[in-house]
Length: 506
Image 1: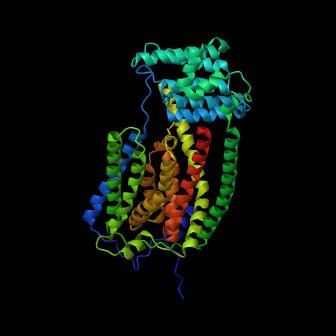
Image 2: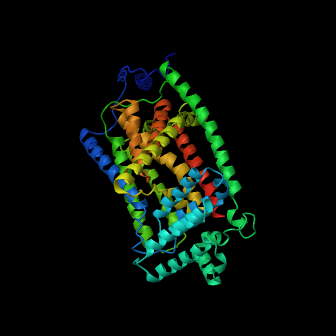
Image 3: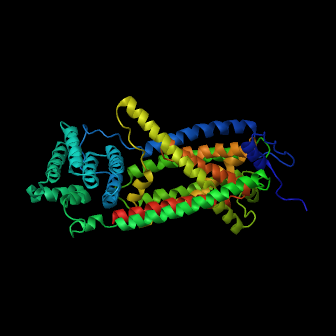
């Protein structure tokens, strides 16, 4: 009986990467091009290139924070991200203070950078955090800087005056004159600065004092969450290294045989589907922006409706049924059970673990490149650039229970189904008609990563994930494995973030 999975381009391409030998050309026997025409393919390529650029820009414009301008307005309301990060640092302050002064200073600097993106209130909170992590002198230094920034500031004069009164009250706190504060000043700090006002007013009390202990509550849970995550990560990384080495050895021996069957060169149907998805995604984003802008403020139903509307994009892959049957679509996109559903799910978990070393390596590379970039900008301009924002944390901060469930479902069900169908189903398939698996995986991974709303340098880990998912598609043929890996990754990241934020918000 002939081997149903003979060695193919995946094995030869892997061999080329490892030993430098040229990969064997794909066997064309029995391969047919997908439906379409050269003219439609040219138009589709132009649309995909243009729409990828437009979507990438729009995504980053929507999530880009407004540049802080302390001379323009003094805002009493601080940012949600600043509040979450500040609370996290304050609750962990007893543990952080046990570290070396240089390490503690890094924590303070990181929050200073975050506060620099927000309002004047964020920078006041930064002073409170510095007082908790370091000493009164550090808090006073930051308060003095806020006072200087606010001198002659425009905007709401009453807000400026109120903020300066709060700065004056905090300067008394951090100069050891807490007892000189009036009840009106104390009430004002709590009313306008909430958690941070309470922390400042308990300055000098023991961490076990009844007035201060509730503010620091949750530190043990946070440390436990981080420790559990680190243990799981280390175990997963060790397992992944073993699986990665096994995969390399098996590939070199020609035993890692791909189930994916690439079409012949030509055709345009699946590239058209990618262009349609990017068009619909862009229209949906623009439409949602207008919808949210015109919807009643503080209406609880707005965000759930916006999140649920993304499920409309699940209909886009059905465009590829044009003139074809659903069975043809399932076969071409990988909507099949492969070698058995459970076996494919297991392959997805194993493939994700095997790709974990590459993902963590790319994450470290992204952080290194970002650090070098910030150093260069600081040397040239004399100003430290703001750190990258995290739109995920800002969104989750404002979600209630129902909205959180919808968002979690979107990340762990919608993304594995829709994004895998588009990027590993249609785009990867089209690219494989003309190039080998590695180049096809890189091309689909680039589009996948660049349209996500994160800073450009931080798309490197996302592209690595996309590359790993594409190689799973090559290996298994079915989309079940990359869908499983996608779900595992998103569920893990979201579970960690939600767990930490649930403790911080208590």
